[in-house]
Length: 219
Image (tube, rainbow, N blue to C red; front, side, top):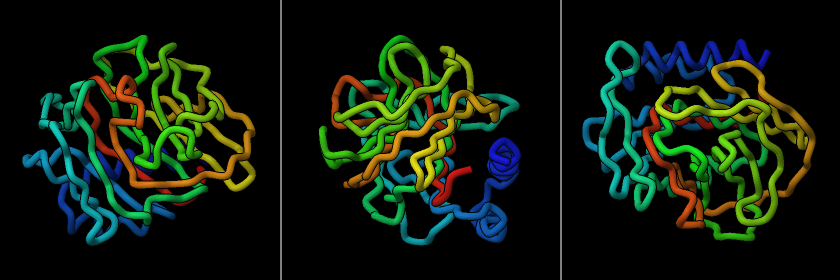
């Protein structure tokens, strides 16, 4: 069921590039909270296509690579200062699925996809590519919850996702295929959402991110 849901969401992302068309179709993705295409021509504003009045602000983030024949423009993260900030608790959910299309340019280092402003050691969820190039979910600055069995390669567009349910069951997906599952129940705390950064300055994302999706249920 999880893989088929990912296929459905991916199809929506590929075909729905206009806000009004996506808004009409958003109800077909159960539990959709936020969808940031991250392909706007103005890089300082990332518009949420799922909920009104839930915008995001970019910092030192420029529209980067044009992936011809694929999904067009993406946001480039320089690995030192780039981030997207979402100041809303609507996306702060203890049961969730995070999904993103990523293009990592520097591997064997930590590349954060979803971080939190709450601070190190405060139990906020962090979704990242770790230094072994596996996907990893953890309590930011506290402890790892689990990691994927598969890895992410450099200079390749990869669809990545993690889901987490109320019993602490997590599942990772790489290009729509399950890549590791386990159980590790945690009590999360939240600040504001960061895309591309954690509280550790050495864990910023290196490369391009396009399409960040937040769903309020596990797949």
